[in-house]
Image (cartoon, rainbow, N blue to C red; front, side, top):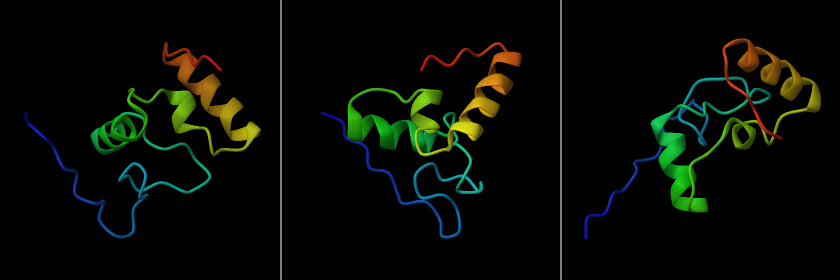
Amino acid sequence: MARMMLLPPKPGVCQECATDHPSELPHNQQSLYYQYAFYAKHGRWPTWKDAMEHCSEEVKEMWIKALKEEGIEVIC
């Protein structure tokens, strides 16, 4: 059976998604590090809803609207 091990993100970036973003913004749902770390922890792939879970309602609304304009529907 093949196993995979993720190295920790470099210092100075978000330790959840390995991306440089302000802590009040969503994690990078498209980051391979985030996807595999999330899968290892939860047994499923992350959604944008998961990536925004820690955000304020105002930030969530802003991101949901912006993602919708790109053709991505976030189901809450």
